[in-house]
Length: 166
Length: 106
Image (cartoon, rainbow over all chains, first blue to last red; front, side, top):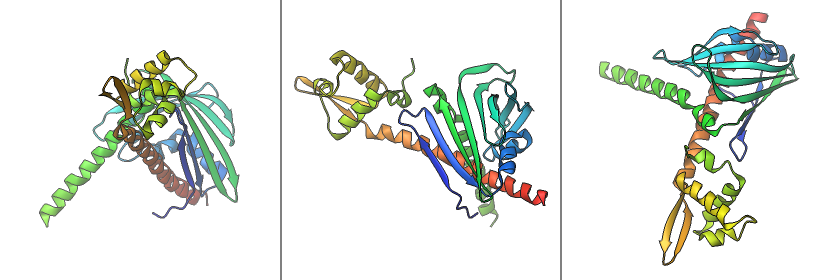
């Protein structure tokens, strides 16, 4: 897939803040929906073969989204997001924390700040993620790298099977 | 308490120490000369860096020299690469979702 859309990814020196900026070839209302409606978020937020599953969402200040990242072997990694500020089609902020399936939070979590702007039918999204706990920062990747490694080993198995057949 | 590389670089003084000893191995006294803080505080930072396995101590005569373990620093690069890849993957999936949404709107 050809992709020339501007993408910027940086971290601050202390590795506590991550700055992500990306342009999308779609107008603001679509991009805003894709970031704020659970049924759309679930379609892109989990890197395949992981799957995102939202149990419930209430997109308003003080409202929450409770969801799980599910790995191919069925393991669920639950997390709770709480919306702390919403300026429609401009900005929203949330607090995010890992949790167990019964909604018991594992604090501290992280603070997320999303800003949206549109120019010439393209939308730029800037995300700032602030992690108070460094240990948590490290853990962010735990589940995903496991999922990605799993998909790689699936691929290896598949290739091995295919090459045997030839 | 858990010690890891993330903790090592969270502190500005420790980042400065890392930059100093990246150039050459140094004694605690030589390191401390570069800071306004006490020798004791520098020792504390060096201890944390050692516990994070980011620096190595070497005895030369009566002096102890501290040097940087470059290999350990690479762990940060690897971690950052993975995080960046995660977001690239997400966004290319989002591109597809947006393009489907566009078609449905028409």
